[in-house]
Amino acid sequence: MRLGWYVIVGVVVALVVVAFLMLHNAHEASVQYVGSPNGYEGFVPNGQTVNYDGNTDPTGDLILNNGTTIHNAVWNGQYAGTIIQNHNQINQLNNQFVGQTDPVNNQPYVNLQDFYVIKGQVPVQQVTINGQPYTVIDANSINPANIAGFYTYDKWVPNFEVAINMPGTIPAGLPGNSPVFQWANTTGTVAYQTMIYPHQIYGAGGDILLLPNKTIIPYGAFDSPSGSALFNFSSPQQGYNPSS
Image 1 (tube, rainbow, N blue to C red):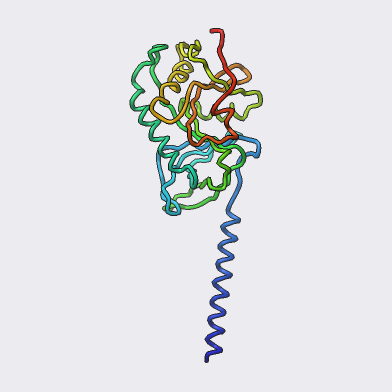
Image 2 (image 1 turned 90 degrees about the vertical axis):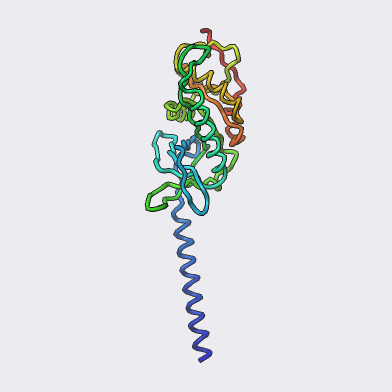
């Protein structure tokens, strides 16, 4: 009888081990890498959160370097709480300023949006949470040096992603007396707005992406996340000052 009991226990243990290995291998196989090893991908939070793996994670869109947008993305892992906090602060500032007028160019303030650039490919998994399919970003598998947070006019976030992946685009900073702030258009407004928001958040503004066709996209950068591989974008060393 004792021998038979040992046999049964051994078979059960073996089945448990096999099941564990199968689940482990299935989990490993479910990880995919999206984007380009040499590209810049962007996560754009939408203000919603989900509970995943015991954590409260921000949801939004994942914009790939080729312009493809993956909806229902979840940022899980490092910086999840920081992203939620940054997004809430930007929304609070939008509520405070939008509806007022830029005193420099006399144009109305606009809604700004935070987003998070990832240099290189992004590890993701396809999961179902509360019956809803999501693409979960495994942020803990990304080198923190390759993650940085930015903000710009909400309608320009996709343009920023195109520009940062465009050969010949140059990041630059605007001097305090730049005529760009006086431009009576959205560019002038956003440039000035990115300068005043850091007075109430941890970050810095007044930067631009200068495209090869001389179009500029003003933006600001957060103090966190601020990976060193994106330092030339979060702290541009080159200045830009158009003639008018």
